[in-house]
Length: 148
Image 1 (cartoon, rainbow, N blue to C red):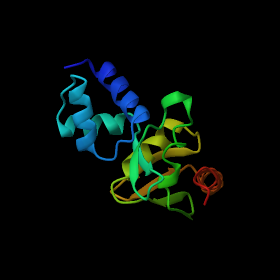
Image 2 (image 1 turned 60 degrees about the vertical axis):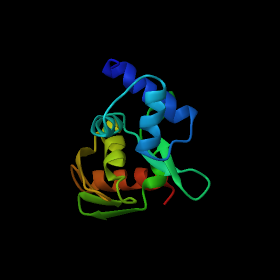
Image 3 (image 1 turned 90 degrees about the horizontal axis):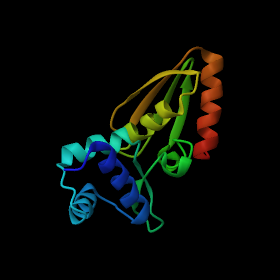
Image 4 (image 1 turned 120 degrees about the vertical axis):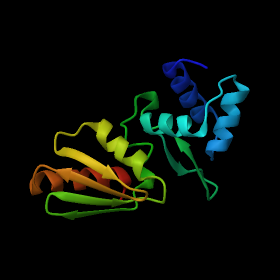
């Protein structure tokens, strides 16, 4: 088995080179390149890399790497943000099922000083900001990135 950093680099390469829609496809492609990992290890790696799913242009979804090529961490997962709603210093984001974790990771990687932390479920993210003014700024940033 490859070292973690090598494995992660290969995952990002495969995702950027090919349109990968499922973990099964990604596992097969990694195995073809002589890197065998379990599905649970792959899930952890995808989360650590901030990988999410985005539109594939054909009505489906494919994996997108959030920070490859020096992009803002949220750029690749922006299409996954469906709604952003503010309640005082809290923001609630909705995503398609199974995508909240990747979007929350993108927010965390952005290291915005207004954000104290995130909590992700399956399709919902709670973003905790320092106060209402900071939440307002983050709401505007997120809506701009997601084009909402």
